[in-house]
Image (cartoon, rainbow, N blue to C red):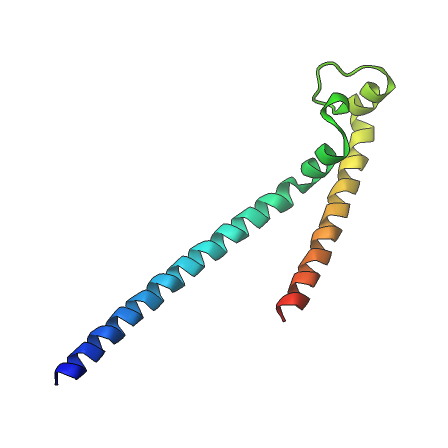
Length: 104
């Protein structure tokens, strides 16, 4: 009888650990989803910031000349932002396909 009691206690502990680890896994999945959503929402800005150094970006107060005029022109910047968003979207779609193939 003493053995059965120990087994039951061990199974209870294992069940508790399983539930705790499942909750932790769910929390980590939610964190990954949130981080990926943030990346998708800000990918165009990240892409532009990686292409252009700070000295020539639109938010630089010392911008001058033709390049500065380019960055101040909203009609020229909108297509660039759309292109960057499209490129990043395609890249993330490609990366998702690679991850899906790798996981399977």
